[in-house]
Structures are given as C-alpha cells and as structure tokens.
Length: 83
Image 1 (cartoon, rainbow, N blue to C red):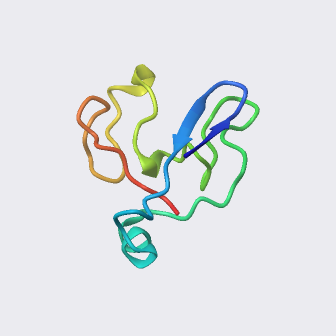
Image 2 (cartoon, rainbow, N blue to C red):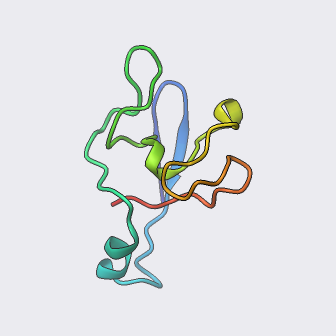
C-alpha cells in the first residue's frame, strides 16, 4: 500500500493483486488514470486524474450532484476503480 498526496488531499492506493488478476481489475475499471495532477489551478478535478468525477464523488461538498458513473449521490456511491 502506498500513499499519494497532493497539496489538498491524500488518498491511499491499494493494489488488488492478492485477490484479483490484472485482467479482472482492468475489466472493472471505469477509466484509465493518466494524469499525475489531481486538480487544476481553480481546484477543479482534472479529467483522467486521481479525482476524475467518474471515480465517484470525492467529498460531500458536491453531495447533491449524482455520480456520473452510477448515478448515486455522495452518501451511497460505492466509488469506482481506475487503472
């Protein structure tokens, strides 16, 4: 397990190698994370970044907006993986 941090947030990235194959993890991923930056200068999540909205809501600030992947609100979205 490793921790990735940016100036505003920290997340824990856990590798699922122990119980899932690479192909299983990739098949369930909703997107590929390709940006090492999480936010732009205005604090907006960057596309294909660590806080891309497709991965699920990252805080309760936008709690009234549904997740673009599953349609659930912040409190009920399970979160979605990226590779």
